Length: 356
Image (cartoon, rainbow, N blue to C red; front, top):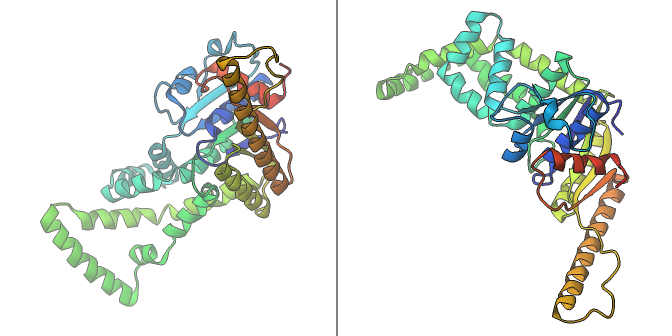
């Protein structure tokens, strides 16, 4: 489904295994000889350590080839991995868009910017899109796999660049940036009185900080607008595809249906459906001559598992019918959480349909 794709976006509800699946997809592409970068959002600590991500790093780091040997999957390409640092990503973006070094230093040191950037960067949706765009423009990688942030609205990250641009171009900010007429007199008097009082109470030069921030912001608006347009074009590019990740519970299925429908309405490519943590029906039964309390408990457990498998099959069927798409891969409940390379290889084998 994805060998010719350059950008693979893994999306779905929170808690369905997006991070693990994203890493396994990237591992499989690296096994095909590609140089692949996977952007993880919140990997489990042991999985991060297995990939060599000892601490939060905002740039892709090559996974040591020695970590990938001896796990039953030959890696002929390169696997690079990073964990998104939202604040650092936003700071890097502002630094890149600043017209010169002096403007960059003034913005990053401004206390109003530091507070606002913390709030904006807290939206992982925007910074995930910013990092994806940056890595695509970088040109170092044959493929980029993005693990999207968990969200109750799976479309938040698609709209994030436009939302930020709309905020920065809103009437209130424009009035501060370039007030005219009555607005100039009101803004001038109002901010001076209010901020003057705050200055006396706090001792902080808020008025100067505000003037400096809004003055510097004017030079960045065009860059934010261009970045939002670039992200939109990247998501609609034929070499970009979306993989919907779900589990067979009701809420993740509903969100996957909603998201897949919206994707198609937006004209974006739905490349595949992956369902994690599927219960597999029991094959065979205990011999009839086996009896006793333990045998009865085993039979009762098998019956419970079959009931769960039936429920999962019905949920997957509903998901496939709603999306008009057969599941590309069903990954069963594994013996333990995926926290190392062996676990990723196991998931990757289900994704690739490898025998055994």
